View (cartoon, rainbow, N blue to C red):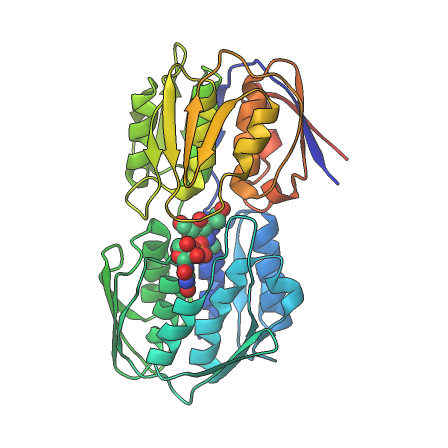
Length: 417
Ligand code: EPU
């Protein structure tokens, strides 16, 4: 199993390029299921989750061609079987995103229930309730969600809590429903907006994406389109946090500062100097960072997907800070691993109190999920001596060529197996 071996202590310095967003790419690939015509995506990141999704779609009969850069064309002219089997869903929860498009296009779908995962229970009840409101008959049997509908019909759906993939699933399904759907308490994440942009290019009638009420007027069919995937805001934030923790100076190209306000604000509070143009963010951290309090919440507040990385920054900052996680109930596994590197972190319920230490010391740590592993890489970059981060297949799910990009910025990092 691959590991990363990191020699800490070198400030990150230089420039690198941000990839396309994982959490935009995954729903966008599923949108291809909604039409018989090809959907051509560019800026598709090379990631394990993207490969898994392409495999899942391929099994259903979607023809996939990738060019040697970052383009992928998905053509769902004929669909073999509207089935997402347990073997694939268990490795990637985002597989649930095929449910809405499949019911809308094929009138039926069988998708394995995702089950729990390392960061919490993560039920999909709101996806199911929403589809039922659109007229789908749904049974959960033998670990599978079996959905059926002749044609979905538009409805007003008020979601109990803000769910990103839930909003995306229902928005995709509603595109082909008869009549108008109104999604209330919808997720406002930029990835939802990117999906709406692509669906609109495919002929969908959507308004309000990016606000908490989205209105979708159903159409009889969608057509092919081309779409450039938005930059990955979490990859951007991760590199910025790493640069800040190592007291470095970096410029990230191909990024979008407009969707990172909450993260940039926290980095500024920690003492970073930040400058942005339309698609570049530069950060310089001159002294020791100051500890900053963070509380995660749906967009536009501070993202849960950056919580672990900010905790790594707080771990070496001056002063004490609190990190509160409000989205997932079990997203502090990285704190225990950081303690192995000498971090002073105390957890009580959904809050971690982080007392910054002058120095972390290298050790062997284990990645437990994607963002936890990113935070351990940051901690390793500042630790004295050598750190081995084990189980980095989690990292490969969501960070394209991370060790190459970090090495380009001067990190002493190598992959071993
Ligand atoms: N929830 C329910 N019922 C549902 C759906 C969600 O109770 O039917 C709960 C979840 O258990 C959680 C909260 O609602 O407590 C919010 O979860 P959400 O549905 O928004 O999460 P998600 O759509 O499954 C996406 C990202 C995650 C990111 C979250 C929150 C994708 C593919 N995944 O997940 O990304 O953490 O939104 O922003 O978009 C990651 O990239 O590392 C990652 C985990």
